[in-house]
Structure formats: structure tokens, C-alpha cells
Length: 340
Image (tube, rainbow, N blue to C red; front, side):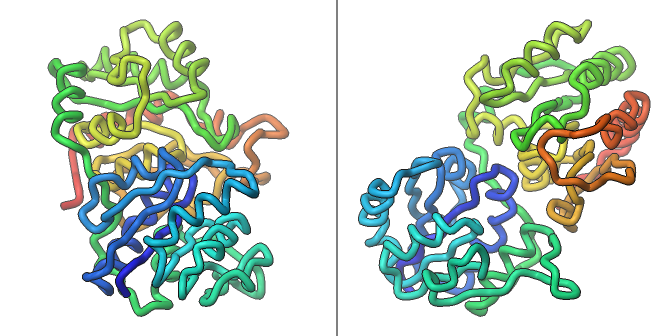
């Protein structure tokens, strides 16, 4: 096995959770050149990992003819094997067009004919059920004999970005990241005003430096936070968000407070404690053995619904109080624990 292409997931958190499987591929085929194929953001996420030798950014939604052009570009790097982590038909079709000798992916969405090697999704009583995504990806490459090394999620932050982030967040007191957004949809978002209240309380009670972490499309959330918070929030990216700076910031945090969103898994990769405020999504997808911190969640009769927009009263999130988050944050900061 000399040329291996890995088709990355689209969501930030899923990309991070794919890193143990990519590392397992490298361990199984140490002489192979591994090329990661994905959106620009996905490629930026895995950039710097020593077992990924090449990055090929592709459009998020390529047209039919564009896929042929992309496949020709990838073909030299995918001669021996393509590993398709996404479940989409489009991703399997792109792998098929590369003419890889072996094409591995989950048998979902009527795409088995495009793949040479497939794995059935995890089922219980005949029904597909969620499992931790890192484990799902590891199970897929397990078809090739790849084994988990137990080291968990992994990312790289470059020194230049780390120094820039340190300059922009300089000061005393614990450095706490506040990530109030969620690309999945508003149902995943704890009320923004409550995040602002948490930041104010942590500033007043323990002198925390609270850093506002928002990404593209979250401008309204950012403005609400800035207008609502009594104390100034640190802006580490100067309104120019990038995955590179996000990784650098998270690597320096003492604590991250967030929804069940991508930054949570970036923190897990850097062994940073996380308070994850979770509502409509199933913990089974995102809760693994590597996380340090605490998940705050209440059981409701309508959840987990997996819906991006709440059709009722959003009680799975509004039932979690500011006091609970602040108390948990102070406990974690007073007793810091990071997995080695």
C-alpha cells in the first residue's frame, strides 16, 4: 500500500474524531503516502499532523462535472486505497471516479456498488444506532487490519499562531473559552445571554479572562454576546476566524465552555477540560473516553430529537441554569485535570 486517500468528514468535530483512524492507517501502512481530501476547513483542521503527507482541499458542494475534474486531480494520490469516512453518496462517487484499487466505506445510502470494501453500520435489533464517531471511523479502517493505539484525538497547533494568541489574550487569571455557537442549528445553542452571564460571573468571582469564540455565520451570536456582557470579552482572531487560530487558542485554554459543537472536540484533542452544554443531540455520537470535564444535560420526554430547530419550547437547553454552569466551571478550574 503506497498511495492512500482519506476522504474527510465535513463537520469540524467529526474531522477531529477521524484522527485516531487516520493514525491507525499510518501505523498499519507506515510507508504509505496519505492524502487527506476534504473542504478547506477540514484540511486546515488536520494540517500539521505528521502522518498526513498531503492535503487536497475541495469545494463543499461540487457540481457533477466538477467532481470529474477533482477526481483526476486526486487520482495519483489514491491509486491503492480510498477510505471514505462520510456517509454520503457523493463522497463514494468521488472515490469511485479516482479509480482506486480499493474503496472502503460504510454500506449506506445505496452506494455499495461504488465501493470495493464495505462495513455495515452498527445496529441493535436490526436498527442503526449511534456510536461514538471516533469508534465508528476506527471500526471502518479495522476492515483493513488497522488497530486503535488508544491515544485518542489529535491535532497540531503551530508555534506562530500560539504566540499570536498569547499576545491577544495576555493577562492574569484562568483563560476560559466561551463558544456559544453551533453550526448544526439553533436547537444546539444554549441561550446566548446566559453565556454572557457566565462570562461576567467568572470574571467577577475568579478573575477569569473570557475569550469569545465564534466562527463564520455566527456574527449575530457574537454581537449579542458583546452587547450583553458587562465585561469586555477577549477577541482572539480580530474578526478573522480561522481553524489555525482556533486550534492555537484552544491549546492554551484552561477551560472551554461550549455547546455540543466542533470546538468541544478540538479541546478534547488538546486535553483541555470542557463543559459541554448538550440538548437535542444524542450523547452516543460524541461522548468518548478521552474527554476531561463535564457534560451538562437534562432528560426530556421529547429528546434527543436530533432536530436543528426546536419545534417546541427548547426545554432541553433552557432547563440548564447559569448557576449550574458557573459552579461547574469553578470546580474544574480549582481542580484542573488534563489527560496526558
